[in-house]
Image: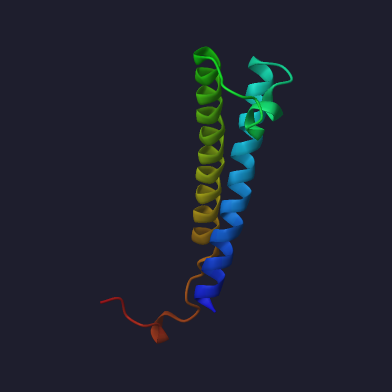
Length: 99
């Protein structure tokens, strides 16, 4: 069961953060070259000039940066929830001693 949950969580995480990165990339491209985000990312734009390649590279870096930032925030929230959900043992006398 644990392995299945890890696989499902990894797949969902990849899908969510990949979508987030692609969306942020497309929005950045639309900011720097209005109307070209969808056309450039679909691969139908043909050969790109060097300046446009740099813009696309910058947009990709922005998209991945946003995805990593959200992933980091997700890890921090999960860690805080894990720490807060740990409960003390009701009866310390029956607790397992910590080596």
